[in-house]
Length: 196
Figure 1 (cartoon, rainbow, N blue to C red):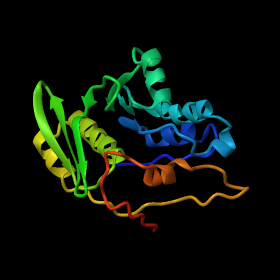
Figure 2 (figure 1 turned 120 degrees about the horizontal axis):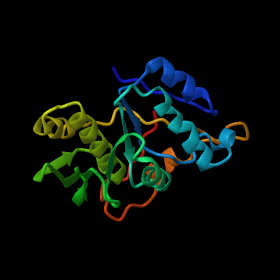
Figure 3 (figure 1 turned 90 degrees about the vertical axis):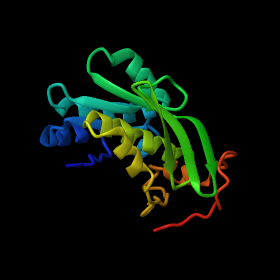
Figure 4 (figure 1 turned 30 degrees about the vertical axis):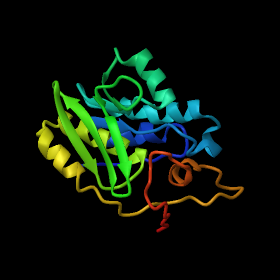
């Protein structure tokens, strides 16, 4: 079962994680979502890290090691909990290299137990490379065969995208839109932006 734990204030994930009691917890980003309520990215990190309060014994936290705050947290705390990292820049347990992007999507290489694999993602953008790395990390933790994981990564499709419209009452999340609108010199896709 996959459960998303959402929050807008400190203490909310603390309550939810004790109900869900996850065996694997994932934090993909600490950006500016909810900053209107929490005041700083550091407080957002604190709120998201509440998820480990309900983590089962011998549970695992999976994090994006290229996010600056998650990387710093990992350096200071990985001796306290089982952590699996994924990333492109910082040395991680699951990494992508030789990344190529074109109008048909992305390809990259990754290594698992010293064996190199080529991964194809049918959607362009570095953020989908990160998503694929996260999926690989989860699949390996669950004991799924690496070739099956990579095969499933190859049929990844985009279903929808949500965008929060800003006003004075909701100054929370600009990052989701920024990911889609920023110029990426390695991404030669059509650049069309769809809203659902």
